Amino acid sequence: MPCSPPITNTYLGKKLTLKAIIFDVDGTLADTEDAHRIAFNQAFADNNLSWSWDVALYDKLLKVTGGKERIKYFVEDFLKDFAKPADYEGFVKKLHVQKTAHYTSALRDGHIPLRPGIKQLISDAHQAGLKLAIATTTSPENVAALLEVGLGKDWAKYFAAVGCGDIVPLKKPAPDIYNWVLDQLKLEAQDCIALEDSFNGLHSALAAGIRTYITTNPYTCKQDFAGAEAVFEDLGDLPRFYKLIGLR
Image 1: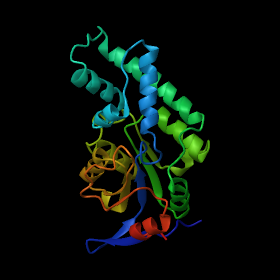
Image 2: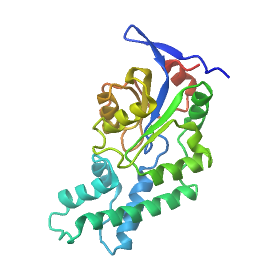
Image 3: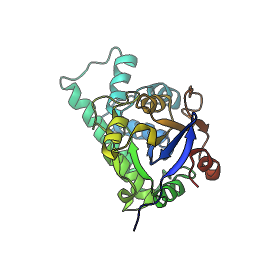
Image 4: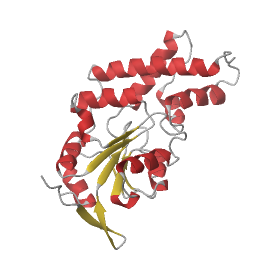
């Protein structure tokens, strides 16, 4: 069977061929951030730590991407008097492993559905012959748990590349994860678009040269999205989004 013809649109007067959509995960595919916050608190309680991240504090902590990095940022910037254990790296890693277990349990119990329009977008784009990919700082376990519930056990068939966790040394807003995905897809940045939800994610994709669309969530809706192609509350109105990106 021949491949589907490429989908084209125009950008700054140039004809472009849209060949791929690259998705962030947390806050983009699903409203996951509060579930992450709760899972962190459960891990802290498991270790008899008195730490408790409320919504206001977690909003500040989200400036740092990556779960282990977020714990370290909290300790170093908000707990100046905390006596770090001898194996501090091991301590942080253990907390993050326990947090991930709590988070994936919530996912598998169906408490974190995909955001409006996401499942249909993935299906439509896949059928149209576009390549799909993931570019996220969250762990492989979190990605798999979310998409298995949202798309089914064969979720991986939709994605030509899955970039997540510690697969690259620098996390968003560095462009590393997007550059890795582009390399896996064997595509140029101009042939792709990214779907993100945050300032860090936007600048990660833009630094890789990828046109980026934003869907906000309660934690990111007040962030600065200058440079984005468009900003949406969600993708409930897919026809409008398809018109913008040239998918019909």
